[in-house]
Image (cartoon, rainbow, N blue to C red; front, side, top):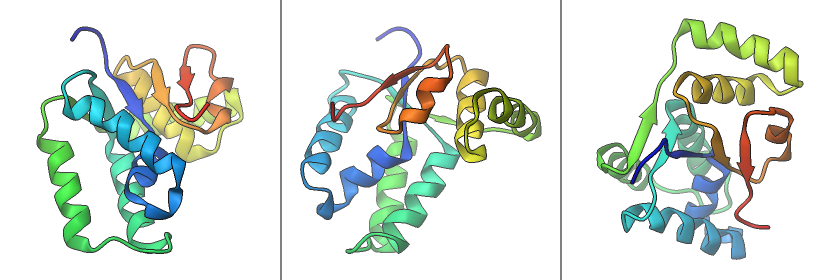
Length: 143
């Protein structure tokens, strides 16, 4: 596999885990399974992992246990076809520029700034507002 991986947004990680997501759960699981089968490489930000952790433990109808969440996070962080992106203070400053330039929520702008810093230009997400960033390719796996 060559090139930079596409980033998987938090919503897809949550759908893959949330039994109440219906067809979205199946679609998200199938997308992620392409990585487990070494067909695709994906990236996530530490921000995505933190958001995922909070949502599946606190905001879904059937919360996951701490052991389940830790096991999933461990698998992602140790699996060779997942790239974990981090960010620093300069990324936060850049996120404010992106927020102002593209009218994004700050947390989405931080994700875009992290992607930009790591030369990642594709995001799998259902969130339409990412399409405001002209250099970013948004793929909605549910369409």
